[in-house]
Figure 1 (cartoon, rainbow, N blue to C red):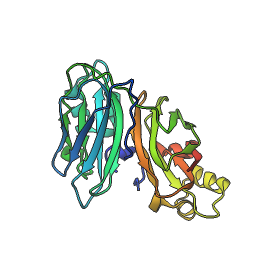
Figure 2: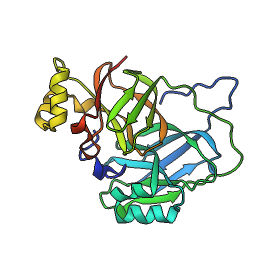
Figure 3: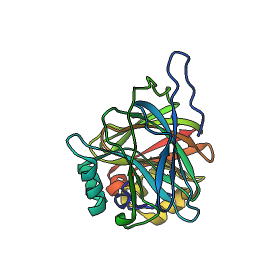
Amino acid sequence: MRIVWGVLAGTAVLGAAVGVSAAQAPVPTVAVTASATAVSASPTPVAPGATRFVISSTEQKAEMGVVIAAPKPGRTADEVIAAVRADPDTSFDVADLVASVTLPPGGERAVTVDIKPNTGYLLVNDAGQEDPSKWVITPLATGGAPTGATAPDPDAEILMRDLRFRGDRTLPRDGTIRVRNVGWAPHFALAAPLKRGARRGAVGRALRTNRERALGRLLDFRNTQEVSSVLTRGASADYEVRFAERGRYVLICFVEGHNAQGMYRFVRVR
C-alpha cells in the first residue's frame, strides 16, 4: 500500500462500541469519509480531547490508506504537504502519523486518538494511487473548548519499541487494542494467523530470512488482521479490531525489513 507511507512496508497489507464510565465525558465520534477524489470529516471542528474517528471508504475497487497526520513542532502544514508530494518516505522528518488505517474496498475502521489543541492536523488519503501527486490532502478543522473526554481502558495494549513488540500476548477477538510507538522508527502491527501445524521456530526463521514461500506455507495471509497501520514515534491510538477467528497469530512489522531484524511476536487471540 502507498500511504502509511506504504512504500516503506515492502509488502501488501492484506468496531466495537466504546464504553464510557459515568465519571468521564463521553468520547465524541467523527466520521471520516474517503473516496477516489476526496476525504472529509464530520462534524467539525473537532475539539481537543479523545476522539473516535470512524473512517470509511466509498471506493469499491481498490484499497485505500487514510492517515491523520500532524506537523512536527516547528513545522507547518504546508511543509508537510510539500514533503508528502515530493517523497512520502522522507516526510517523517516533518510529520507525525497520529493514526492510520488501510481500508479494503468499501471498508471501515474505527480508531480513537487524543486531539491536541493548537495543532494543524491533516487528513491524507492515498486515493488508491501509487503516485503521491494524486493523493488527497485536506486540513482537519479543529478548535473550541476541550471536551474533557478520555479514552476508555483498552482490552489490550501493544507497544512498538525500537525493533520489538512488547505488551499483552493475548488480544481480544472483538475489542479495542491500544497501539503505542515508543521507539525511534515508524512501525505498523500486522497480525497473521499461524496455519495448522506451523511451528514458531519455523515461522521465526522464515520472517528473519524473508522467505516468502515459507511464509505462505506457515501463515494464513488471507485472514490477516491489520491491527495498526504505520505510526511514528510517540503516537498512541486505540484501534477497534475484529479478528476472523481465535487462535495463534504472529504480530509482524514489515517496515523497512524490520521483521528480518526480529520485529515479530507470537500472540493468541481469544
